[in-house]
Length: 404
Image (spheres, rainbow, N blue to C red):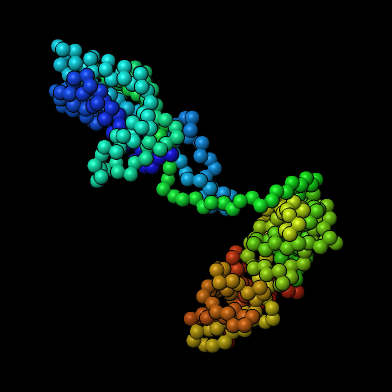
């Protein structure tokens, strides 16, 4: 592993090795430059230019997974990359400077293709305390960085040189250096040790939901007090549970069959009005004796709308701002979207209000202005709308409110 300075350290160590190589060969007059040669007549020397960074084909997925199922960090995310470098040799052609420099560097890299840990540490130790590479830890990386020559044809070389828009061309060779393993500067939490192990095998068939219906509508919508029936296959398990939104409840044996399960939508379940998903869950004794029940299988999810239920007759009062009160079950939660919809029975424009207050079991909506007359009344909570009742004439006639 290494930190984000690994890429810069790689270039600096290669620059240092080539500089030491020139000094040992008595060629100290040639510069070593971390750049591409520029101008029509660049200074004699060796030019090092990293021009491409690619994911390491062998190690790009070696750190998976890095997070646990709940999202906490399991290990530091690690980026494995390889770096392509172009090394260009510039000098007097009459004394064969480019060829001599190329032979010197290529022979060195062939004989010593790896950047040794001690070589990297010695190089970093020789830097001043305030150097930009202070804190680099490429030498601590377990995998050695290796230099591998790349075979670039004339087209590849012309493309690389063409990136810089220069007409000058020098004798060049390309190397790939890697892998570099860059670790993110985050600290994963240490997991708790395994206290005990448990192994169990239980026969099980995954449940499948095919249809939903309630006693009040025979559809996938209902109100508190309805009996919800779930139809499907393989619904009975060692212990059968029904999940409605965020609420999970265990079903009594008498309410569970292989092809259907039933549940009374009671206020004690803590359900909120709105469109919710429903799943059948099978639990089995797979855990330790202190907490044995674990989820063994769960069905597909199907949508179900728990409609707000209007109790009693809504009322309206006031002449300037008009206050409309309606008793609703269940009452909405603080994060739910609520609106009151009024449709005039005598015809006219529909009125809607979203601002409300809760007074006991009633929702209180204040309309700045509201024409006198009778209105059909509906409450919408998280997309689920309360039901209207059809009267003897075959039209909707309640619940309604009379505005004085």
